[in-house]
Picture 1 (cartoon, rainbow, N blue to C red):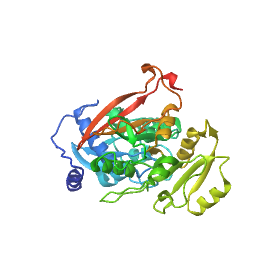
Picture 2 (cartoon, rainbow, N blue to C red; picture 1 turned 120 degrees about the horizontal axis):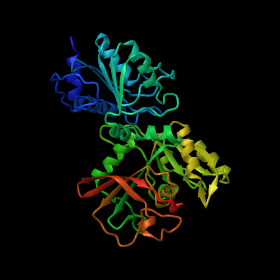
Picture 3 (tube, one colour; picture 1 turned 60 degrees about the horizontal axis):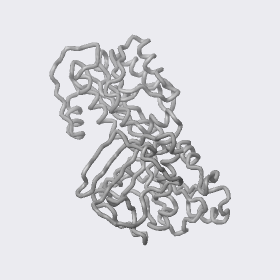
Picture 4 (cartoon, rainbow, N blue to C red; picture 1 turned 180 degrees about the horizontal axis):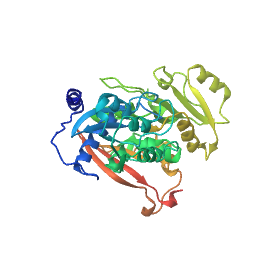
Length: 396
């Protein structure tokens, strides 16, 4: 008997409807493959923000055009998506097709190799969206399954899978965390008045989306000026609850007040400062629960690449930067930003504090940072633009 009841429950939960019409089996990627891979991608979304330093992964097992197993990786150190799906499919995994959003692992970590489990279960064909660039895998899972006689097809909905797992894939390829820069500004590019008032630039709908984004990242980062001006909590405040990210403060001279909200017990806080910063202030901030990390000073600030290297070494693969203008400009000029979320409110200040401050002026329009892979969304009266930066060589 096919596992139709849990499949129907999954379809209802994820807002999916899966048609189970019978089609001829082919040896190559087709519309049927895309249909099941989209379900796997939807399953993977359930692990977003919960699996670092692991990727998010979804898996679906199909036999005779019926879903007999599915799963998602939900937490680092816990069973992977393929294992959940194989357990559900049980004996019906034999002769089936497995759809998985990332190459099954081939190494022993906190869990055994998924490639071995797939082979042992008797799966006949595996459709993989993206090869895993992590050095311990890097095609070895695919090779092992092919050596065991399984048909393995790679590349089904690869663009969607790459985008979904961008933080992990970027880390695996570069060793750096994936940085999302969030900016909320007026139409003329101001994030606050000259007096520093920024409550609120955008509407409630936009702010709620930012809290949803915080729930999905590993760390949220601001400069000390934002702490001094706004005294933010940098936590998740959603009606349905959520997981607070690690808080990261870039504070060259350790000016963070001892009563700052970022020192609350709601989430861990890392404060990055220059090596010359006050030892006494470090002692006091440490007593408040903060972790102080000293890095080299660079051009009056601190080495932001060193900050990012430290965060990735702690398993923090997705960092959301929320301001202010100096840290936004520095990260862009260091080419450390991977994605930009730009909220524009239908307001004009005429004067105020700019959203981004570069250390050096760009004198030609050809020196501008372009955004590609653009997405737009209306949030009430606010306008959200999401894009990937393309850096001109001259910006450095």
